[in-house]
Image 1 (cartoon, rainbow, N blue to C red):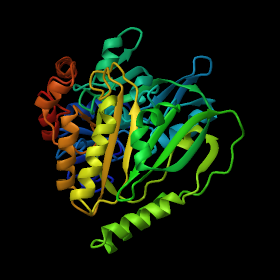
Image 2 (image 1 turned 60 degrees about the vertical axis):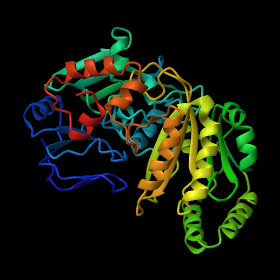
Image 3 (image 1 turned 180 degrees about the vertical axis):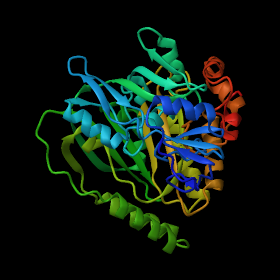
Image 4 (image 1 turned 30 degrees about the vertical axis):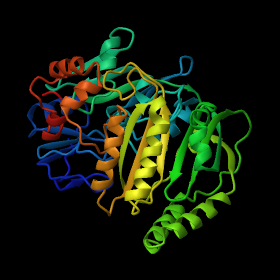
Length: 428
């Protein structure tokens, strides 16, 4: 057992901190079971710290499952891969590609671990593409008494639906098997569009590509539209990323033109209207992933797809009327419906809308106001991003919430994985 020196832990953005009595790094499942049974509780599981909610925070024990990492096996005929749950996505993509496989979809950040991505229903974009948990074929986890349990989609399909999204509250995942596809190339295109055109053609712009998303640039009357489609041609030159430079410019204009909003809009809009379209082909993970260095906090809600355009209009109006300090773009994606009980995409095609705020500034007032719009449209929050909901709200939003809680109590009857935060959002 390679325990770390207990100290203050914080997430990526710095908005969540904890001082656990112990940070444990078990080397194998036997040591993991011992920690779960005997370590100071509550026992919480660390991924990469990319959640903005206090899912990991514990004054007892934080588990680092980095030893459960790597590509443990793969089947080139069935296109399946068995993966350690502590494997970071960025490492997994390289290993899968070398084995001739690819994840069917990805988000634009690859720092998360597999266990963390599954625990919070992390996703990419595309109405015909599911979140990571829809790839699950098998799950291996240590329950609240340190016993290993295995679930197979062919033998226990309902248990896969119950534990596929689990917030680290049902057990500690050690290994999963994914259904993948042959490694592939994507043609990624990016272009600036007038906001009016985006809102008028919202559905078609999201539906007409394998994967597509928007970034609405505040106070510009413009958006960036990104599309991703399977490509047969050779890899082409990947243009240099300029997102971080763009954020710095947006922040500078926000700060220097507080009293001249009309000039802010004119300058940003004029610059965007002259942005040259991007068009390149890359291996799948090279097209999906972008670097994110500027720290932010985030709120993301998942709405019925048909509510997306209307909710977005309301958010833009609210932001530009009442919150001129906001400069981060609004991100809009779509996700396929699935059958996982605690998935925000449970049985409904989804429009996901994410708002961001500089991590050095207080997002509370802006996020509270936006959340009212999300909730009016029956949104379900991303489990790893900021929200104010409690178990009572989730019981209404999730038809199988009660069933999921019964499974959780069976797997963790002593509530070893339940922190005060989880007690608030789950039926404990």
